[in-house]
Length: 325
Ligand code: SF4
Image (cartoon, rainbow, N blue to C red; front, side, top):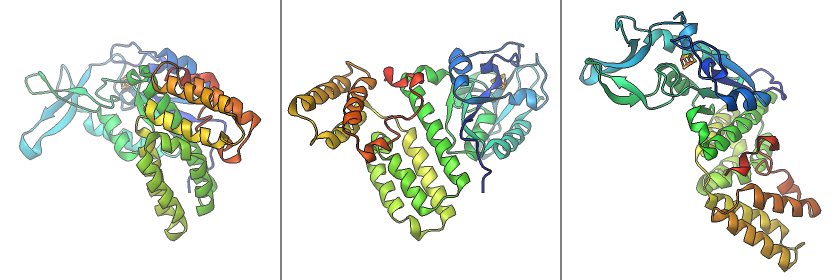
């Protein structure tokens, strides 16, 4: 059983240099204003610099990924740029294992510095023996963390400039935190049904087919051991939410929501909603516009199923993420 979690504090791991800490090889930092100024108001950020943690000083010799060996013996090592006898591959892997054990049940997301041979999630340059860049791979620390904590929401700071990816990451952090809280309180089939019901429209927006498959899994919740149920559900939940929700997907959910207003609304109000959803679907207004109109009608004609949906309030409104997608 994971230890009880504080509802108020959502912890998110972050590469220390993104917080403005001067831990890079050249003694500098890579402060990210959105992370440092905005996300720090909503999450308790946990800075981690794996290179400093394994004993490389600051400033230090830069390291990079290097391919060694041939055929089946080929492997990627993390070595010094100037002195290739400095090999920190095992040290970074071991440190990632220790952090996965220490942080696994406590953090609800992780933000990593891109292009780093330690922290980069993808497309970090891999050099050959002659010092030429060839293939790409994730950084060593990030790769081991992703392997150990496959369902933990992780993202690179560079990709947060994409409004859809930014919204997706933050939504996943909040969902994962609610899931961790549920596990800490003790998962039962009845609690899973309640959790799933509240996330239905969110899941529908990301993958209609998986939304239906997950519904069938939850319907059989009492038929499998609770540990197995938790593992299966968590993997499918987080895997589904990782997929991008398009304007068409959101429009489908918006029409679904409108279905709960058919009886109380007159034809003029219904046409106004349809027009607004179509404006959104065609990219002329952001998602917040049709949602605000629907919420206005649901305040006058509340519906318990709709009120329970996290889709309508996936994270604090002040983040204003739906004003940009
Ligand atoms: S990218 Fe990672 S290893 Fe490099 S300075 Fe930042 S936190 Fe440290």
